[in-house]
Length: 193
Image (cartoon, rainbow, N blue to C red):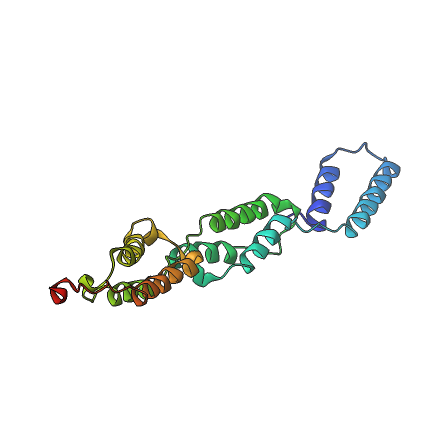
């Protein structure tokens, strides 16, 4: 990083390496005055802080996320990228700051949701599977069977945690379908004869 002292030493080296005509003390004094004026002017220079707009935007996005919704591996990448952010860089290091922002955005974009929890669905299927099917109407059994088929499908089993409400709703529907099975009407033909 270039500082006031660095610039001053570079200017002094340039002036000191320039041959001066002999006995030309007026020229040398003018050059010394210019160097002093330049050094004084540089004393007021302030190096700007790098632009962290993209980094701050990514951090704001990250702060709105719930780590528990994502796989530990994918969240670890985000945490690593976030921990790599340093806020003391100047404009001389803008490229490094841009890379910090890009890395954090890329890690956020690669987040993977945890899978949905199917425990309630599995318990509902078990509950709805242990009964004498011969006692119930085909129509009411079809409603139950369709729900169980859906709950066992690959598509349904690939839901993520953001779809947990839907998964739990299917569990509730399976239980309700089991509880609402309709009995077949009794066959009285043997009695009537």
